[in-house]
Amino acid sequence: MRISLPAALKSFFDEQVTDRGYGSCSAYIRELIRHDQDRQQLRTLLLEGGESAPAATADAAYFEALRAGVRGSREE
Image 1 (spheres, rainbow, N blue to C red):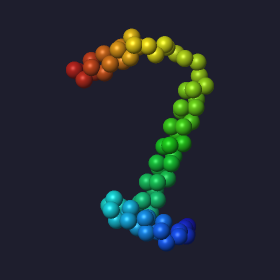
Image 2 (image 1 turned 45 degrees about the vertical axis):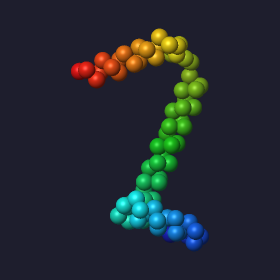
Image 3 (image 1 turned 60 degrees about the horizontal axis):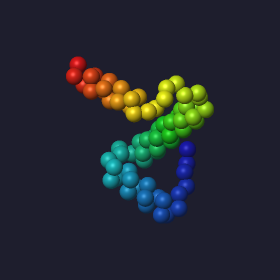
């Protein structure tokens, strides 16, 4: 696969590979693709959640129960 970049983007790309400690240009590209996949998956999940019926009322008691559950799991 060949990718052509304008000079400014090429410079930025090279800086990212060097400054972020990637072993190769391919490693940086793979990470960018993985991040994009994650972003798309999150968007899909958010849209599905937004279209679904509410499972519980998210009021103060709901959030306090979540906090209590988290505090309880830390003590185990």
